Length: 237
Image: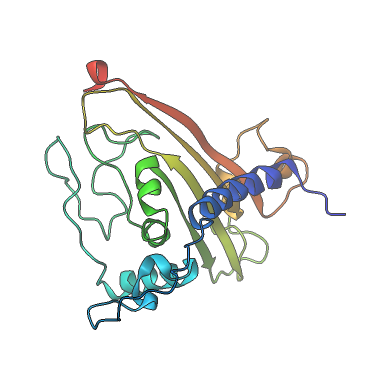
């Protein structure tokens, strides 16, 4: 029997939430087409070329491939009612300056990362877009060379010398409120979890901290953020 620490349970819960949303998006089967009396024409598109009928991992691979080649399909500019964005994304993760854990009021704040592109192009793509739920994250390994034998402190972050480490694996699940419109109230949330050696610098005492303060674990989990948002146009428009 495998025993999980409270920190590992929180991280696993976030993974399960992401898996649930992914399964709910991809779980709807496409009904096979029956025989037809109509003759095939050259104008018909082969089934394999339809992104909605390709597998989830095929769509994900294609989205990453297009992103790495810098040839991602460019769509219309996202709606906004504030001045033009000060940054270029990419290479910056966001085009607007973020503040705290809230989304920028007046901008769409929707991502186009490969995972979401794979979900948007799936059989329930419109449902994903309408739900405004997004799943994204990153994996950041690290390596360093050092004259130290036991610790790089107080250099920071690269704590353990002369080895490859998982600095952080981060997962976010969020719903972004629509703050471009000014007609109705909207809501959102953001839940984030991290695993890696960087938990040393984010863990809070009393909140998953025994893994560091009592067990001195080199790698640990941390629920880095969990918050909600309520957009009220008359107040925040």
